[in-house]
Amino acid sequence: MDQLTTEIYKWMNSIDNNYLIPGSDLPAFGKPIIGCAMADDGLFSFLKKDIGPKFYWTPEQIFKTAFPETQASNIELSVIAWILPQTGHTRKAHSSETRLPSREWSCARHYGEKINDNLRRFVVTYFSKQGIKACAPVLLPEWSRKISNKYGFASRWSERHTAYVCGLGTFGLSDGLITPVGKAVRVGSVVVKKRFPPTSRQYTTHNEWCLFYAKKKCRACIQRCPAGAISEAGHDKIKCKDYIRKITGPYVERAQLGFHVNSCGLCQTKVPCESRNPTKCIERQASS
Image (cartoon, rainbow, N blue to C red; front, top):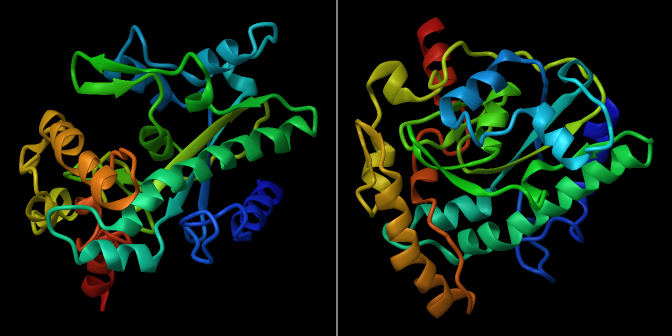
């Protein structure tokens, strides 16, 4: 993993690969963090059962979908996930907004996800050059969005949940993934036919790093949401999606980029978990 991590850092350090806007000197993302899980980790089976037994992929199912001619069991596969943190420049611009996304955030949402896709391809190619088969689940033509009986809007493979299994963070009240570098992030992953040591998960529950769940002290994301889609009961995906599709997406097309982008993310900035795990701050205060 050390060599892969080095290669990812080098790739992301190039402005030709990591730009906020094509031709800009501003990067889209800061330094990534990377984690790994073995494909036979029981959490992957749990996610399939919990989110969608009939449609949600396990790593083994993904690999068989991508490489039907290759035999591979869970014990031969690893899942590698990464976190791409939004830059301080983008977070600052977005923090000043209250109802509509900043232009910087919209650019990071659109061009940044293209960069994330390119990073997925880069990692797959990195392994391919070594004769090792790998695939990026969300780039497979078979990947699609689905409806979960339990959770509503879902997909065949969730990057956030994968990162959770890979030791990179836990979920907050808004459903965002709170990582060591905060919640203002993009997430990616690949499945590879090689065993890597798993990243240790520094948590035991799925919402451990959220101040609301940990201490009942924070409701900042509730206050930041212009759609009223976040409450103490959690995240209303329908309200969230409607606001993005009807308000922010058309706004980005009309006033910012000239095309529709599903941009919002106001709940990811101007909150205690914007750029850190806020529960660590509490731990340090308690021990001082």
